Length: 101
Image (spheres, rainbow, N blue to C red):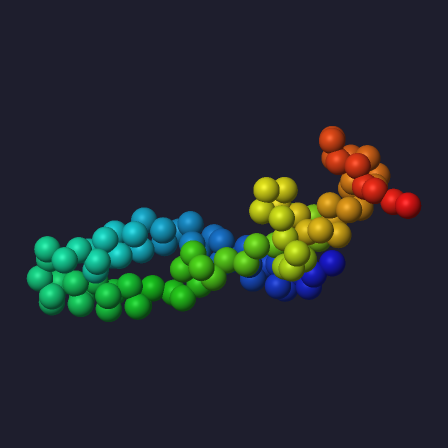
C-alpha cells in the first residue's frame, strides 16, 4: 500500500485540475494565439502563472486504483502489475491466465 498522504495529495491535484481546466484552457488559447497583440498574450501568460501549480494536468501521477502504487502502472487496467498478478492468480480477471511452471 502506498502512503495515504500521497494518494490524498494526488486526489487533491486531480480535483484542482478539474476545477481550473476551463480557465487554464482559455488562457492557453489566448497566450498561444499569434494573431493577438503581444501585450494581451503576455497578460494571459501572467494570469496563467498565477494559477495554482497543482492545477496543471501534468502534475497528476498515475496510481493503482487498488493499492495506490505509483510504479509499474498499466493505463488500460488502471492498476499496478502486482495488483494485476494477484487478481489474475485469484481468477478475478476474465481471460487472464497466470503462467507458472
